[in-house]
Amino acid sequence: MQAGFDLVAMLFGLAALFGYINYRFLKLPHTIGLVVIALAVSFGVLAADAAVPAWGLGGAVRQALERIDFTEVLMKGFLSFLLFAGALHVNLADLAKQKWAIGGMATFGVLISTGLVGGGIWLVAQALDFALPFTYCLVFGALISPTDPVAVISILKRVKVPPSLEAKIAGESLFNDGVGVVLFTILVAIATGSAGDDLGAASIAALFLGEALGGAALGFGAGWVAFYAMRQVDEHNLEVIITLALVTVTYAAAHRLHVSGPIAVVVAGLLIGNHGVRYAMSDKTREHVITFWSLSDEILNSLLFMLIGFEVVVIAAEPRYLAAIALAVPLVLASRFVSVSIPITVLARWTDFTRGAIPTLTWGGLRGGISVALALSLPPSEEREAILAMCYGVVIFSVIVQGLTMERLVRRVVPAEQGDAAEH
Image 1: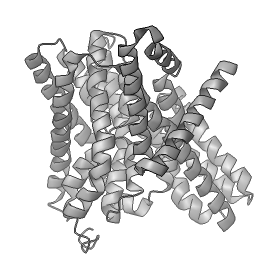
Image 2: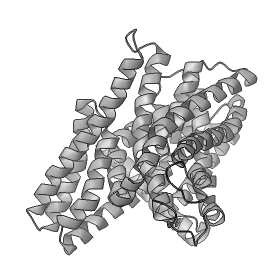
Image 3: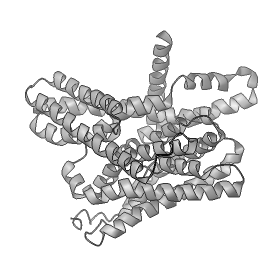
Image 4: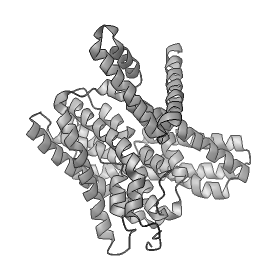
């Protein structure tokens, strides 16, 4: 118990220290600043370990980090709270207007990107002469194709885009990770030989529909129960507890029922953030609920992005994978461009889109902790090491380079005077 408390104390202490350094000196966006500082510290540890192996600094840090199961912490801990907090701030009316674009990118877009990335990485592996079976290349495509809602929403807090374009970016990121996780699970089962002989196209489609629709139904039902309870009381502390119960119970129930937990908490968050805020809360309660979840979101984001920066000590890619990392970054971006362009080009026959939507959605499709967590969840193997190295390289490029340049790109490709007048 004491060891666990010491670890939590260390993480909060480092988050506070790094946040202070970033605020005073680097002046980067908070989450990106934490990643940069944690990366710098990680590379410093690796350099010190290489220069003076007798100190055992790298081993000590690696041992401390390995006590934190990143996959468990994110996928079964942080993620439910972060998704709910993000969904609270999404306008349901704007989301509904863009449902076909969001649905297309979150489903067909993920499938297209998975195939393109998988095929491209297979060619890269062949060219660089390291063994990576095609099924594992598709596994990499599945874990890296969905945009990360945590990273995306943290960027949207400071980058001003037209409301309908913001709804597309946020809505896709909130829903496509549910699709990506199901696809990843299926492909891992195929790659490792644990799928069995009965996993055909029909069973895969049924699994997709069951996970997605089941998660949405669970989130909708649980959200309405919480909404009804909150309408009966006017006590802000109790209503904050009701939202906490909604998130934790819904996510736990989704796991037991084998439906999508991420989709369930997103649907619940959208319901509470729109109808709940408007019809079930007094002004005082609304202020306390929104403040609580904004603060929770900021704290968990700080810890998550700092851990992403530290994971380089655990991952430490072999030199032979460096070329693959360098090629994976443009390949993932190109695949993202195609997977965004196809649904938007098809839908453009019936509706107009904000000028600059495709480049904004392409560059704004950040990858983050979810991709790293999925890669870390793979069973130990040589294939896992290659996938982990490429995944981490793409995520770091995405968070730092795309995150820091997103605002500049939006200013260049989305006319300020256009707004949303053109969209229906």
